[in-house]
Length: 211
Image (cartoon, rainbow, N blue to C red):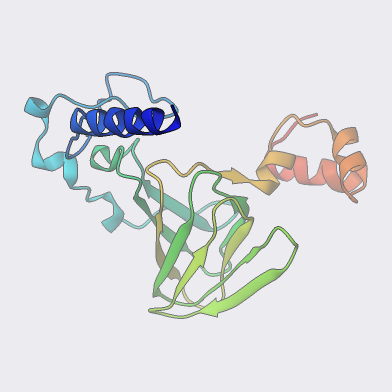
């Protein structure tokens, strides 16, 4: 009986593989909402070469903000050709003194390459080990999926980097924004951190949070 079940399983597997649907790509169809698996596929007859080309990363991001930095994404929501491919890219502009605060990408690992300037970057592992490095032009650093990491302009000139991800939609959560740009009640933040109420209210005032 065991042998029969094994043979049946192998035959069923081969049959399933022989009838598997294989497509070259799944260009995002923006007429439908994005879901957990990404966007629905545009009909092949409506796909053009422009779906696979994205030019906006040649434009510098606006760094006139509190963090003096800008991230310009080419994720599936902006670049339909990466939908379903498990890849994406973004441009990172850091003015002098610019910083990308501690954040995570729950859906992807990240690789950063420095194109201009100097960037101090690092991440914190799940055992609270901190990995730091000052990166220069041409240097590359990887940030494992889901771990807190950051980038800071480490020099006296603007810095530019490009970051690629192992997902068309890597997700993003910035720790400071989660705490101080939200309606997370102050008393709960003080209870779950080592910050006092005055510090929390000050940070909420700076970032526009409530509670």
